[in-house]
Image (cartoon, rainbow, N blue to C red):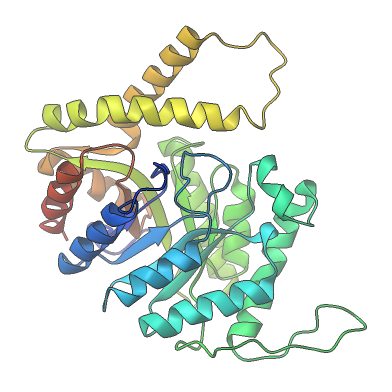
Length: 341
């Protein structure tokens, strides 16, 4: 069934802030944007887990940053988008996020991702090929630990109970689903929320995947409440032309950095792209995102798109804001968006 609100709830998503080196204010934009988002009534702030690349280099541990944000806020939810589950022991994830939950007074939430970058798996004992099964199995383990149950991790070992006790009895869990229908279906079967985006699916596929998720959720928990969060690059201007102009170069740089990041893991069978070809591919992707797959435009255009997403079954739009747009433009975007909630 589709979302019941005329427009989705709105939250703020950080994903790509680059590490600029040892300067004292590297996290100032994130702290200030979160404070403004809370003041304006946004639902949540999301922080990711990223490793071994300047693109997203400010985010090696979402729990650490979430704890800092929790200590500086009083209402807004603080969520991981996402914890790459195969890189961590489930007991450690339960401990860290119970601390965030306690520090925030019960505002923590976690999305679990399977991971996609092979380079990240130097941190893991889980084989890359088994990452999906490992992540799905962790859902039940985390829920048990969160509720104070003892869990035995080794047949010949003693069961353990994790501390501190979280504030909330049940951990709000999402599964990060980016492309095929399998993870959407798995999220529904396990009664999880879904965090998704437009990186590897178009609008028609998104609607199909949401339908698959909601059907699986209803079959598993007919009295439960499914929840779909959609991450979108966001910029709201006085005019649509102004917004498109503001994001063109940042999105171009963002796409080039993303292509460079993927080059760590993909061994191309054909001849390697030239720098000029990569530039043109990045420019094409940037224009495509700005015009069709982002939340970019004036207030009326953005409101129209939000209504479309609600009809497609999206409950929450997580506005990705740290992709190179000037801070003042981001602040004005949040203020314009707040008028639509």
